[in-house]
Length: 235
Ligand SMILES: NC(=O)c1ccc[n+]([C@@H]2O[C@H](COP(=O)([O-])OP(=O)(O)OC[C@H]3O[C@@H](n4cnc5c(N)ncnc54)[C@H](OP(=O)(O)O)[C@@H]3O)[C@@H](O)[C@H]2O)c1
Image (cartoon, rainbow, N blue to C red):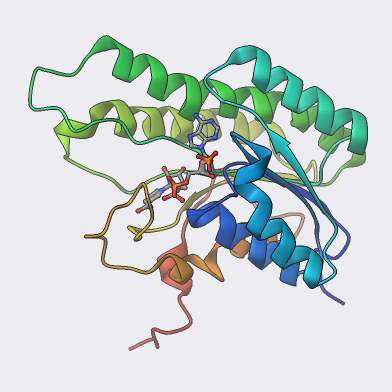
């Protein structure tokens, strides 16, 4: 019996890139999927592919920099599901490359709205029903980016995500709800760019690891999908 069969999962930013891989991995585990992107049309090809395989799939659209759209997305999914079992907070934006001392305030503002504020709202509103049901998995996608000052609005937003997970995790001990961080690795996606060393598919099956944890596993752990690559044999 697959452990996640029948679980309802919301994956933000699942039209392409890492989110699409997460959706495909969860579909193989037998989950009922809620896909998300800025427009439902962006998920059309994935929906067709999943429906051909008999997967139950719904699509929701929201621009995550718009507070009202974030709340409407959450209201919609909560009304239709009563609460999801799995929340994969994957959507994020990369900020423009800026030479030292030229970063604009709006780079920080937009990055934090999409990558942090929306993510935290999703966590805060989907956590209570998970706690009531005594089961849930939330994975916040972070990044291993380091020492790239030209992309500070992006890396600082990920640092804020890491801090949210660190500070909320102690309150989840022995609740059945597990909050984790996932770094997919540097991958060739629209966000990662053509120079990235890894194909997007290499984030599977690692993206599933924090979802398959036993109920007594700790929250607050950091997982790197590249550590679980099936094409790299241990030395
Ligand atoms: N790729 C890498 O090398 C890498 C490395 C470390 C961490 N990550 C993290 O992995 C996650 C996924 O990255 P990715 O490379 O797969 O990115 P991607 O290919 O650019 O895909 C981004 C996804 O997020 C959605 N999205 C973008 N901006 C949005 C907004 N303002 N409002 C709502 N949805 C929005 C997109 O939907 P639309 O189709 O509607 O645009 C799309 O589904 C991110 O959290 C990223 O920080 C990636």
